[in-house]
Image (cartoon, rainbow, N blue to C red; front, top):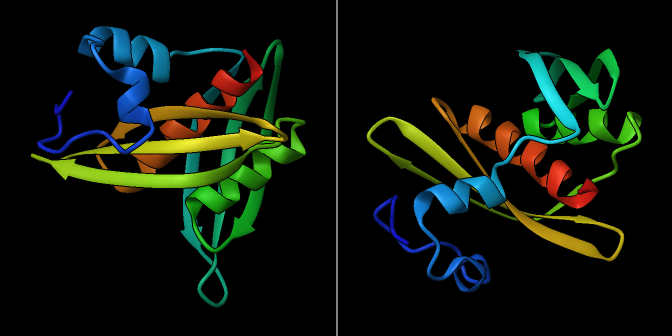
Length: 139
């Protein structure tokens, strides 16, 4: 699959071999228990950013915030605070015609799962992939 003019990252490429684009997005970007309502990011002291988000985990809807070196770090912290611990083992990002795609290899303890997110900016795509990764690991 070369939707973004380059092959998928190693590891994900093997998992997704032979999948249609629809099947790929159904598998690696499917919605789940964790749902992002809204989020914002603003620069703060030093080189840090503050991220605010409204997130639903199952039936609970919460407004949260965290400060980190970037939006992905802040959202990872927010998810951990909500009882959804996740880490990023690998990150690949691409841009084609104004659309960003992020591929993450996410982990929770011994479990690992690839995820995919798309957005108008690299941050949007990264956050979408992180939420998809949390859902794949929770599922």
